[in-house]
Length: 309
Image (cartoon, rainbow, N blue to C red; front, side):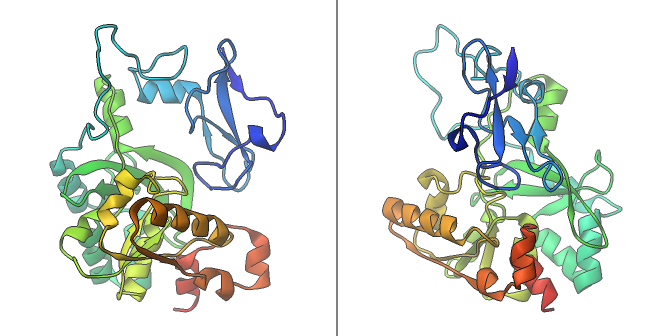
């Protein structure tokens, strides 16, 4: 009933939701209707470098209320109006607190401690709200907590404690809850680190892609207030409803290697929608070696900062 979309040219391949590489992601389609299951349900061609593969059965396990024929949420015949765009489910904040207190700490905590010391690791854990998973051994939970201190979800990732490199598997707290309860969870993502905006009203905001990079950059470039988009498309940060928390701020984007042109376009789109002060840094592009550029291994600001540490 479901199959990967047949290749009919570059337009049939998309940006991978995990690694961000364009024209590498094949989506699953319903062979009867021709509809995509979901934008993030498919397989990345970069199996050795990325390995992202989300199957339809995984999508429907995480979204019990979805319509199997289309992948879209089921709508009751009695419904007369769609849900408001501001309606979403939330995570009890007690889960956030428990993950911060859980011991032993995650591999990512260990990596931060090895680079900057245990005290800094603990301080950053409390500042950014990243904790340790109780169910996934040694994994880190990067909580998405908004400007109103509401927890939307948490991304669960396992890191190598020595090199600070993440594994390929990613899970989400809201998905775990949905699988356990059998109930659908209406997710609305926000920036990682967004809660900091409430207590730092005048500070210039810097935005990167990964949670790890935002944390490391906050240690080495503390003049900025650091947020992460949680992926190339991640929290849908280019949507004005998500980006509106940045109104009145000076914002600087720090794209990963090879993403400067794309993020420049994103900056232009945001300026048109919200008219705020936004610029883009080419620090990573001009600071990497030819070998690093050639490797195309996801080199980013954290890699640069750790290299120059």
